[in-house]
Amino acid sequence: MRLKHEEYQHFRWAILFSLLLASVVGIFVAIYGKDRSFLVINGLHSSRADYFFTYVTYLGDGLIWIPFFLYVLIYKRDFFIAILSALIICTLITHGFKRIVFVDEPRPLRLLHDLARAVPLVKKNNYVNSFPSGHTSTAFTFALLMAFIVRRKFAVYVFPLLAFIVGYSRVYLAQHFVTDVLAGMVTGVISSYLALLIYEYFRKKKRQLQQEASP
Image 1 (spheres, rainbow, N blue to C red):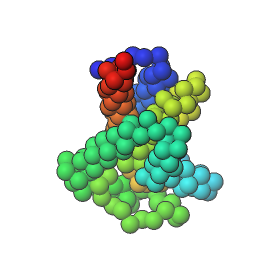
Image 2 (cartoon, rainbow, N blue to C red; image 1 turned 135 degrees about the vertical axis):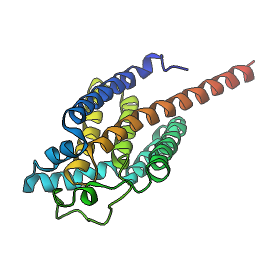
Image 3 (cartoon, rainbow, N blue to C red; image 1 turned 180 degrees about the vertical axis):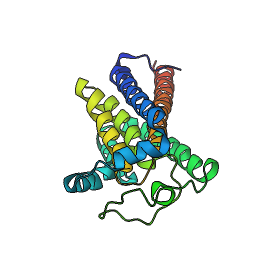
Image 4 (cartoon, rainbow, N blue to C red; image 1 turned 30 degrees about the vertical axis):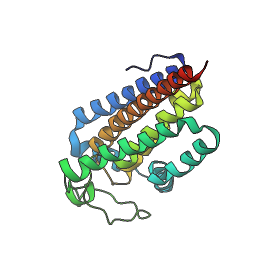
């Protein structure tokens, strides 16, 4: 099943833009490698950037789903299945890799503890389960669903760029490698797309039932 309807146009463009960003990140990693790509970003710091990225990173926190769920329940109830599906898929993929495939994968502060710069405002109590970046996965899943809901040209670029900044913050704050962020971006694309496929499936079923029930 493909999302061909015109109402998915902005979502499709947001997907393409997100994949373009992911390609740029992939090229960056290919050029510098896992460790060096992290050190390049982590080393570009200032006191203002410390504050900015410390707080902007919360846009990828799991708690961001709460206001999203409330908005959908109040204003767009038929979209609830998409949000729920996206949350479940994103969580399963992210934690499946973190806790089954790449168990206890070391984070930068453990693997590069002599070179990584820790931001004073950020707690330094998490040293494992690095791959993929859960904040980035959440941010891109959320961003792409917002692009579908808003359906404006600016949403195609603004929401993925905000998610990209969240991913950047995870490296800047020494919480993840760039490879973790890249995997999080791909996870967000997959999660949002599958969630909208499920949404479209249930919408078609609902329309069929309504047509069969009508005289």
